[in-house]
Image (cartoon, one colour):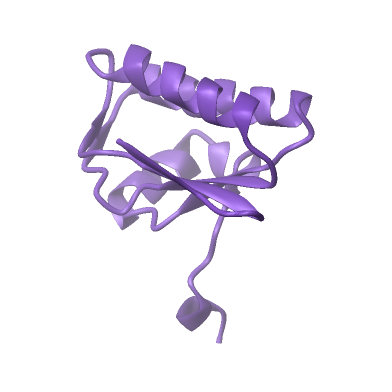
Length: 105
């Protein structure tokens, strides 16, 4: 996981797995990023291959923490398989998922 910042947003790249084995470390880094930055916190999920209930909990927790510090959590580059999981759990209605410009046109 890598954090990159700029004046209007921070970008956090998530690795291939967001599950019970990786959630504690990811949660800690997301909380640090939310507490120390400004603007949107963008999670780049383009490399994410697997997410479980614990990983979904990390996303929901980060979303709530972002709201509490007057920020917005944005999911970018969500692979189709992960998007289906978000849709089935209806988290796509709660979390802000960035839609590629090509999909809008």
